[in-house]
Image (cartoon, rainbow, N blue to C red; front, side, top):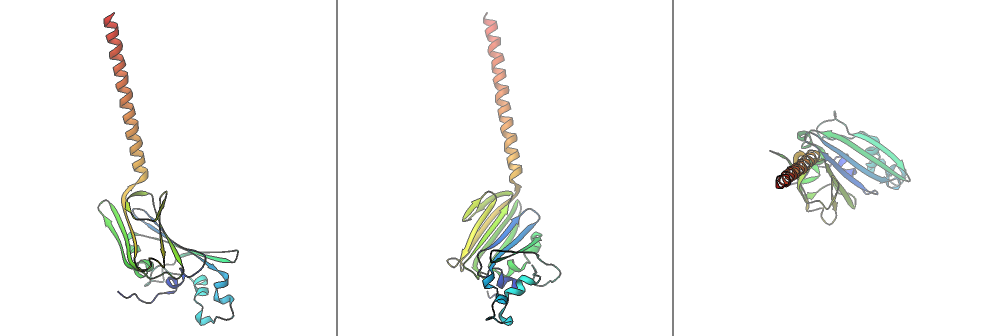
Length: 222
């Protein structure tokens, strides 16, 4: 299926630079999206006299508002810009409901096949097929959740963060799959602790009963 022409935000947020990240933080009622792009100052056309304003898409990306939805200018990304050691870092953040995320620009445009399905006991995310937004060498995709993860195929797991790498080797056939319970890890941990305490209490109670019976038998023998 052919994708529509990419807007500025899509065309730029993965352009060359030092590093690029696409971060999602998932909870039962909200998805936090955070896009981090590091652009070398030497790659910014406005600083190079050899590149015309017509060909300069990076400067508008840095200076202008960016929007999470294609069909609305009412909603804007929260943008943060930091300049340090010859690099300009642009961070875009937006919080979605689950249904709104399915309408977002990144979800609809970057992935050949994108699915985010609500299940009876949680939800499942699938990004597969071609990835249309790799304009640098590599993109790091981080998905974070405090909920119990039932299954995943992440390249790396660190605490509650699951990481995939998209590069030239897999850009035409990505596979990001994650099934998440609607139950938080904290609840599971508390339940485990309560169960452990209960188990220990039963053992102690049983031991005390055994000792009393043993002592009573000893007294009867005398």
